[in-house]
Image (cartoon, rainbow, N blue to C red; front, side, top):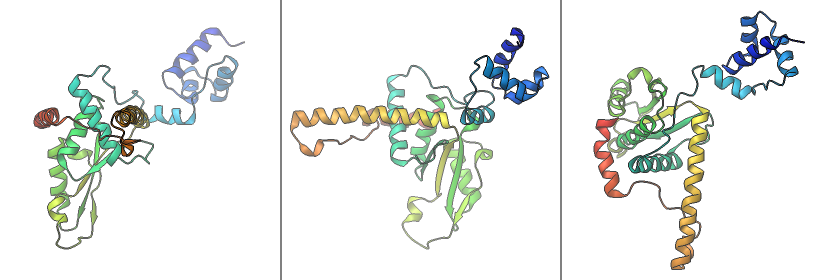
Length: 242
């Protein structure tokens, strides 16, 4: 039988995030023997997904959700989840992505990531898409300044052929920016929040239908976001806080 101290050592090293191979290197055992010992002593092995996540995040989760939120932070969360709901790339299961040409909108989202999700600063990345009549470097500098992100956290800019003169130039002078956090666990948190708000507002819609008897209300979900005067107050302080 394996020495109990060795079993505890394997459990400790594996619990720290080391792979079976890495554990074997520490204790001078072949990795197959390490796995056999784990199976024999009921030490649960990680799934491939969990192993990949630990390898990509050796220091643990790169975010720490704030446990208790102020009323204003709750509203900021509602806004951020609403933006993710309507504008986010939900088909990407490996992270959270939100694209828009409105700098103030993206600034609010980045503020939420920093204040409420407390994402590690270097994990917030961005990607810019511009038309060929816009200088890519100028566009990246603009978005870096607006979102308060270092230029080194922007991936290579995508340049699309210009569509000629048109109103699009006024709407998206500096192109579109995508804020990205590549972390599947944070994405799962966003999805839980989304379901929470969906259930909450669906219930509100049902109550409204019962009270006013309006069939069109059934199943509708009110827009998620700030009450105007509160939202304006937060947006006014946003540039200082981001």
